[in-house]
Length: 175
Image 1 (cartoon, one colour):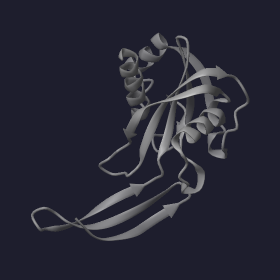
Image 2 (cartoon, rainbow, N blue to C red; image 1 turned 45 degrees about the vertical axis):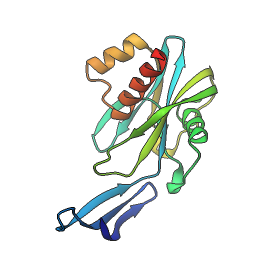
Image 3 (cartoon, rainbow, N blue to C red; image 1 turned 135 degrees about the vertical axis):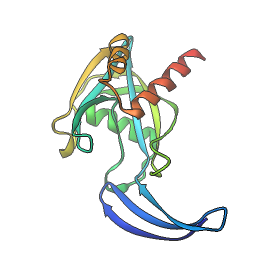
C-alpha cells in the first residue's frame, strides 16, 4: 500500500517518483517509479517486408534496429491509434491505410508505469519523414521477415518492445 509519494526528478519525457509503501507484512519501505506516457509501436508490413528504424540509444551507447515507436511530446496523452500513425509518419515517412491494434506491451513493470500498444500497419504509402531533433541520426530500411529473424538470432535486434510486438504479430497471424 502506498502511504506517501514525492517527485524526485522531471524532464519533458519522464518523471521519477519515490513512493513510501507498507508491505503486506506491515513493514515499511520505498519504491522508485519511472513515469512515462504510454507509447505506440508500429510494425509496418508490406508483403514479406518489415520496416525498421535504427538509432543511437544513449543509455546503451549503441545503435539499435527496432520498430518505429514513441510517445507524444511534453508527457501528453494521445489516443493510441493517432499516436501510432504519428510515430510511423514521423520516423519513416510511411502512411498506413490500416492500423490494427495487436495488443498491449508493458515496458518494465518492475520499475516503470509506462505501457504501450503494438499496431500492425498495412496499405502503406511512402512519404517524407518528420523526425524530432533527437532522431536526426535515425535511419529507416526494409527487411524481409527472414532477415529480421536472422537479426534477432544474431543479437542485432534486442529491443524488448520490438521482440514482444513481433510475437503479437505471429500470434495474430495464427488466428
